[in-house]
Length: 221
Image (cartoon, rainbow, N blue to C red; front, side, top):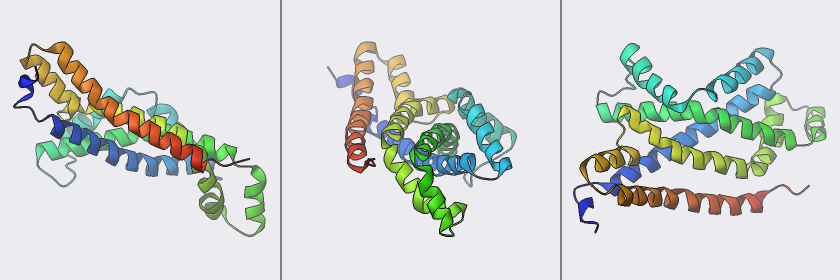
């Protein structure tokens, strides 16, 4: 029944999907946190940049962003990220596109967590002589992260599924292999079920584990 799987690197394709997810998640968390800091910061120019970035990027289809990284950055501007290997370059471009897109949603999730922190705590920290950066990093963000584990989990799950868009620029992840298998094999329903099961195996444990973590670290008010 599963003889047609011979000759296809199914585990390798899903490993590429996992790598895309993990690298993009880390990058999105860093960039999204910086964007959230800009949006709540005291500098009007930075607030304007953060607001414009989030409102523009999250309303652009991810496919457009991924294609721009390939057609715009690589083919037009000759950005190579220090490699001439086609597969490595496309992988890095896909990670960049996923970070650019996902960070807008991470920003909004973190900003919602910042808004849950009582204003009095920030005012008390400023009264002690802490500057904005110290207040944000020492007082506000630790509590904000604890309150947005759930929303960030949803973003991570969405990111895992969004990695399939990387197939548009030739990244050898699960969706590209699925397309190849459907073209070569007369097993449409079975192939679809196999890849659907694979993504469930990636996303379901993530949701359950991080959901449990979110309940454990939630700020009790």
